[in-house]
Length: 291
Image 1 (spheres, helix red, strand yellow):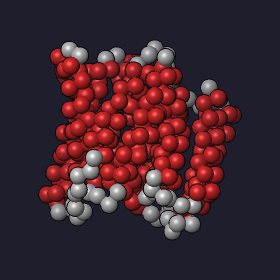
Image 2: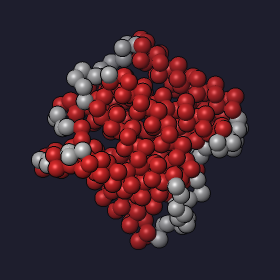
Image 3: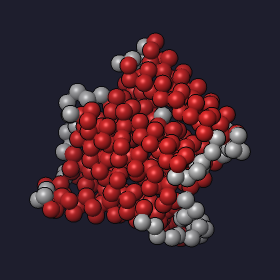
């Protein structure tokens, strides 16, 4: 059952990526992020209320509340970086970088839990890194220099923070045994608080220079992510489910995001990007089979 939930999460995450690209394209990032998060939180709270589960989700210990707040803080940093990267770069560049998160999740497991990779895992890492090199090659054809473009740096930071969040998710769900609805509800609440604070600080400092325009895809971003996270949390909460496999399968959303970049946003340089994408997917597949 956890695999079906993870695949559903990947499909919804692909739709979220497409809506996110439309929402931030030429638009102010922080208000898009704030209102998307707010809409997603309202949708989830309304769903809990309709099913009679809201009161149970609200009841949480101070320790668990602080733990969820830390997760939301990590994700806030990840999303701010990713949204700015998505505005600055083609979706067919950003999504594959984000899709490499399973590589960083495995790397985090090595550093934090002293898990040394076997030969197949090491080979998968090398292939993923080769895919990065190919995307660098594809980006240069569009005037994007990976070592200098700020969007690439933001996408990379957002990806690493996302991988950190994935490792922390397993701790919260399988070690702390926080119920999924409780975790997701307070995660949404803290996200609205933290993202609202970042937006307020940006406005107060005078750094907000791009005008904000409301788009119908903004609430789609929030609702799509809530649904994707619901499937993801319920998959990961099951006993013995490996975070590296869940993270890997979930990030197969990159295929849908890449296709949308070509068909909906008329992004070019298809052959080079397709080769780079295929290389990364082969790498993460090797990582999956290596377990």
